[in-house]
Length: 252
Image (cartoon, rainbow, N blue to C red; front, side, top):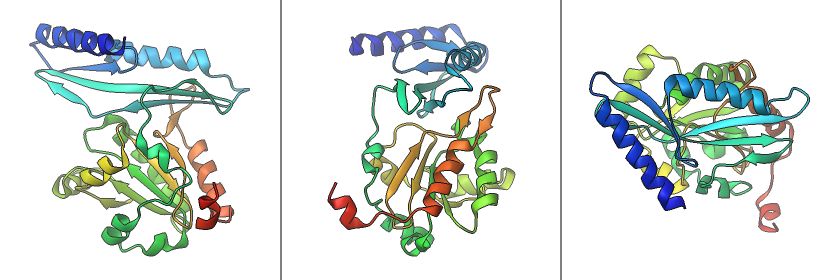
């Protein structure tokens, strides 16, 4: 069944592209269902999904996990999967688990981060790693919210952005858009080794370098606005808690 859906999606995409030779058009491809939406349909879908699942009396988080965009002819295709967590349990879960989630409660391979940013064991502070790239629209859209985190926690937390984009491209991007993280570029091999497939991805690391939380981007509230509640909750917990020791992790 999975093979059928994949090939069906490719066929539909091909049809959409061949029929559109006038201007560049944006589409959204749900990798789990094979359904394709134009921009207006996708906006409407997000609103309907929010209304369906969001209950102010319950703890709900809806996350759209975008993968690298596909450009074919005059069409831009944004592949994505969706996670919906209600009261700590998945209501809808993306079918392909990324290897990065296997790092939870494990020591993050920090040698690359330390070498590039000269951070010695993350300075005994919690660390936020944001994986992004310039052409990832959701990545760019959440930057303003991430900057608010830096403003509030800059003395207590390390903030590092990691991308496979070239340094010159990132430097040019930063001339027009403030992104107040430290930046690691040309990091395709690191990203691949971590098994990150969907962007944006934010990893929260404790004071001893252990991965504690992983978020698929800043969540949206019922008004379709970015909500930092989950990110702040994670940071406050890491700042206040005693970090996990390697001995404790080895016992698990």
